[in-house]
Image (tube, rainbow over all chains, first blue to last red; front, side, top):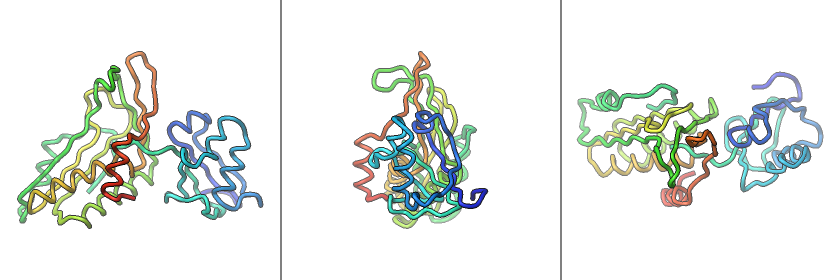
Length: 89
Length: 150
């Protein structure tokens, strides 16, 4: 799903997209990023607004279009999406 | 069948498609609209954002779950995305079954599931142009628990 070796693609939706002013980005999977929890922590280190990603009860995640828990192991080529609880219907 | 689309739908046309020459004795439909007023505030529009690919998968999962719980002959779910003005249609659900109990229950299950289990997010804009992302309502979460969804 993603171009480039060792890279993951991250998508941000709705309120998070506006908060971070970012719709999507590519990130290298370094040794410090093994699980979704690691990714949340690394992104959270960017600064104030990004801390929201470390608040699991407020931001949810999907990996390769399947809802995923923080212990989900990430691999090169994965597509990760972060979003707040849905409001369809 | 189910689909995500920007264009409006015609309820009469969708109902006609649900009528089949089988043992269907009951058709229940639901149409969701953009309220012109929400909690005392005048609403100008509702913008629906979705996750192309995953939204369709989660919508299919809702349809599959409804069909596994009740004996349904026809299911149609149409959910619009994009900017919708006050008064516009958002969602259509149509369910056909031999008897009404299954049709009523499945239709309610589907709309309740759409509130908490499908990848869609609503941003409501007032007449001054101020937008706010809506959050899940406690009542919707309760219904999700009642149906044991997800």
